[in-house]
Image (cartoon, rainbow, N blue to C red; front, side, top):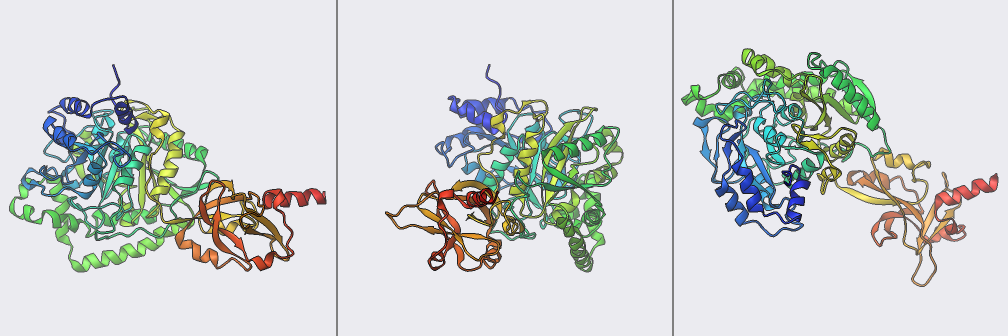
Length: 602
């Protein structure tokens, strides 16, 4: 019997082998149980058939062709009811959220809407009239929230990916508690049209998946919100954290505070060891500045944003809300506009202190949550237990940063332990690059004991877009290890490849330059040339101007043809400066020429 597909690669393989999407998807929805509290709306055969009937042709434009997914029930789908886990609030959506539309245009098939902590207020997954969502490893423990249902259905292999939302950790904590990847984009990076707000200025749609590659592809398909109001703009940061040839400076909390009874203290120590093996320099940090930011989220006027969503309902039907959710949102009444502005000023003061961290490290690694409470413990002290879970999540969106939650281990008590990597705003692509390296160094069990990862599960077909870059070929003193290479590193340039120019260039040693430099000249048709060694880098477009200002005459930047026929920007030289400059082309490049001089001296 053919195993059930779990990852995007599994589903593609099934279709490559001739599976019929209608039959495969109907079989899936038939197995969705009515008593499964992860669902608020379970898809039926009619919902599937309607979407399959309008599937566009399978091809490059439909990378998710016939692949099922689910969305948290605060995300609108036209014709379906949105409840936000509050029946008295429910309405039938007239438009489909932009993120869902983009996935459907890519061929994905919606099979249901998932349970959540009511109005996305909570990190536990227990605050819903549709039932508590249990942890997929041990039902005595919470699943995490508020995107509890989305995490559960992915961890159990019902769908390969699902959408949640994340304001204070709602897309990261459930990922950590269920052995999943939880990709939380930079606020403002993905469209929020058609998503019921929790805190509109902080909310972001998040992605749950079994692998980094799958989360990365979904992110690439839904990102881009240039036509929407933005409340948190991505910062001007590099689009990567460093390639495999550069040591990543990774900040970790001096006192993580992980639950020893669950074995999570040792699990985090093991995660630090793994990060070091993967290529990180571990930098212990005092997280007090970040915890001060985190305290603003619920102990400040941002809770009024939640009140703005449900104000009418609270006034007309106060008992329609979950008691704990109502108590949290009721706190908004303590604040007025003056308090809101004062808190905003306070946040900006804290931001200066918090952002100073990026002068010391490239990224942070934290426990996704320091503990996982039992459902019984949450029932006894719902606010206290919930608050513990936001220790390493609450500050991220307030600061406009990006984050990616990843599985780390299954601790000795049998619960999965996860870590989250946090980076500056706009570094989403960088986090994916690092996460792929992290993932390759682990055991690779997918979800709640579904199966071990295979190599094709970990190959991303696409990744989130990085900041705009320019491909730049260097030929002389900027080569790695040579005197001017630091100018590239200062501008966060990333090595793409070592290659050669087309065989129609000549290289000359320019006299009187400090440090010594070559000049590259393209030869006219019919005149002999050589392939010359070059290194091609990606440089952020924002950094190109300052780099150009450092280039002395007779050198400049122009167009350069590579051996494979591509054209990139690269170093060229004024023709007048080549008169009398020795032709060193026979050595194949600047390194070869320098090596020959050393041999001559020897």
